[in-house]
Image (cartoon, rainbow, N blue to C red; front, side, top):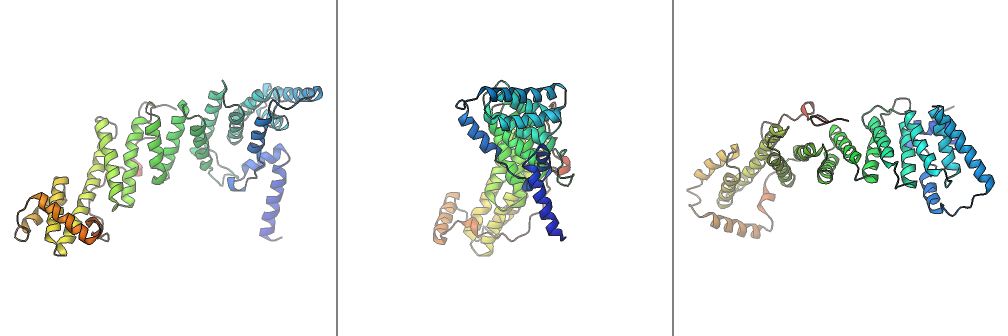
Length: 390
């Protein structure tokens, strides 16, 4: 048999198993996410929610429901949580609008959680929240979902015989907690787990808004100070990847400056100061190159304008020291005139060119040599601020 035919046969067999039994569900859960079958459980449950209260149950059906519930509950009481999880899952599928619905879904969550089957536990948590969004048990459901998600996102729940790390499932769970229980204490913890995951993955495009959301929505959480620092740090890392984008640079500097101002004794103040120094050196050197380009093109008025602006904006930078020398050298070419006159002349030239002067600066020069902050992956702040707990 050809290898491709073998794979197709295996996929078909697993598909058949996944649709007909508890064994099939377990086999389906062991597959990587992109291979799992989708039986449409959530769609069926949404329909059941709409129909609930309008289904007439016969006495015979009530007897069958009670017998099925009692059997599942007996397995739970006997601490056979694997069997109990299977039975409660079958119960809510067979009787989606029974009088035992809420307690059955709750015990389904409890059974799978106590069995350590965190993938199925998350499925049960989603089912419970969908069917009973307002409940005294919601806090327990949220807690079980958070613990399950943490097991995944921290890499302790591999799938498909250990081949796949399945950390992406943890991301899915944490996002679900934040969106389903946005005002809970665990929502802040889940958002922190998400943001830190993106940092470890060096995905700055996702890490930046993740920390922004944490800092904006959870100001009373233990993660707030760390989130404020990471708002600047993630933008700093984006600047390192695209250092000629002045908007990203300015945004990074603003976040870091506000962190230093708001937390003068902050845990990561020294790192923030080093990052700020590096960002300022990048921007001042960029402005020097603009002025130098104008000077090389024989546009002495524009060159002097940018040299003076550089000295005014970044007086302590190395680029400012070089700019002062160029200003002195341009005295014979550009007479001493008021800054207002230089600005007016630069505006006139910009209109004549039809575009701003900064866009004329070369972007092919090599990166300036500067001392970068000591914020490598080896020296990042800890995943939890000092004094925190899980």
